[in-house]
Amino acid sequence: MSSTSTNSIYGDAEARRRRTLDAAIALLDEGGYSALTIRAVAKRSGTSTGLIYQYFVDKQDIFAALLSESQLEMADFVSSLPREQGLTALLESMIPEFARHWARVGRLTTTWRDIEGMAGSDRESMRELHASVAVFNSALLAALAESAASEGSTLVDDPALIHVVLSGLKGLSDTIVINVAKEITPEHFVNFSARALARSITE
Image (cartoon, rainbow, N blue to C red):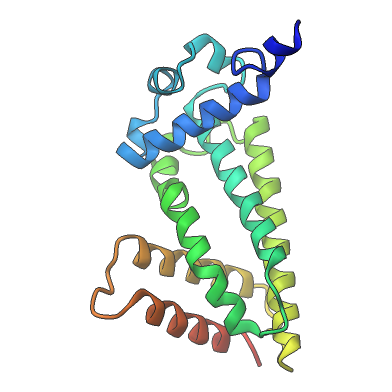
């Protein structure tokens, strides 16, 4: 295969996979999970359904891949944030980015689970998703602990802490995405929420 063919969208397997995922994101943005079909993804990405099936078993596989990608991107983002400004500053930086990912795919996870269930949870895409969640959770806990330590605080020693933080981030993100708190500025909402969440997980 020539280098020209290898580097084209048709000759590069990773580029075709990327194009498929980008098409899926666009469909999710436009019509939610119900808009995500293999036929629609093929049409949007300019490829055939046969090519898509070379990389993904079904649309559940595509969605799981998007979730995995989102988790790993968030893990990288959290790991890159400075710790020396303290826990509130860390959370204040995290919330808008978490909301961006939540708007893209996170808020659709409930619909996905309701429609598809967890059938096929032993498939490779689901194992990769669980692994990516573990990577993000580990990065998040490290960032929280280090940021708290930088201001002389410690995290509450309880296994429920990570779940409280994640639940808080999801709820805050949903409020931002659907713009419920119209009477206050987004900046005020994020700052107040970051301070409240930081207080709830430190001692």
